[in-house]
Length: 289
Figure 1 (spheres, rainbow, N blue to C red):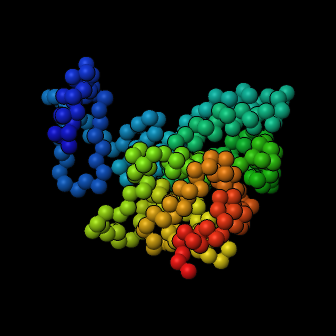
Figure 2 (cartoon, rainbow, N blue to C red):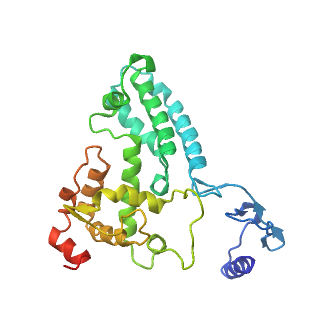
Figure 3 (cartoon, rainbow, N blue to C red):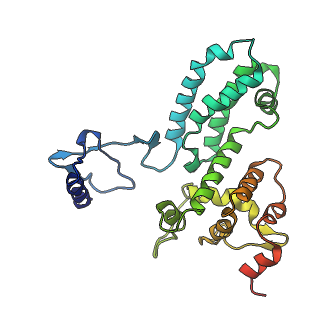
């Protein structure tokens, strides 16, 4: 790492650029040996437990619990800065709902496209969202009104919950990645397989974005009575991504597909898959009769 950084620094100086050691940080991940010292010139880079990059909080464990905590704090501040609007009675509730979706929710869900969220993460996001919506609608917890009814009253009948919006963002980003050229880094990263000789650690496995996408799109794993390969819990191949890659090439149809997947009324995948392929084509692609 030291040699790579030295080479990069020397090449950058040829174009009149230089690194600022005070702004460079070092984060170690899965490192059990002694702490190394990485230097730029004659100054040692500071080692930190977490740092902010492009507005997102990067932690050594690879989870997003710290990032979600930071997002919740910033969303609370954005909501509090608009309290003068929420208190006004001469503004319609639907207008307040549109302002909330435009000014508060984007702060809360910034960078959610790449979050490997867990059930607990979604619960924390829902708690803040429901609290804000109840404050806007002036409905307290003892009024015995469901969260779905409050959301419909503020955001309208088409208003989506936080978990639906997160899924929509992630699937939309997945479509962008699948349409990228093969040499692009996100495309190469998502299609990279398990290395030779790699073994899973004991116990439960860390939730990854790759696993999240596989779980979200599992509703497309069946066409009538035929099950497409790659979506099995013990299947580590990327055949499920190859199927989605064919679907994502048509932007309009992919958009219709992900909106249906994120809908709580989604039941049968056959109507969605018929947008892209016919059943005989799927059978000819994946099964030898």
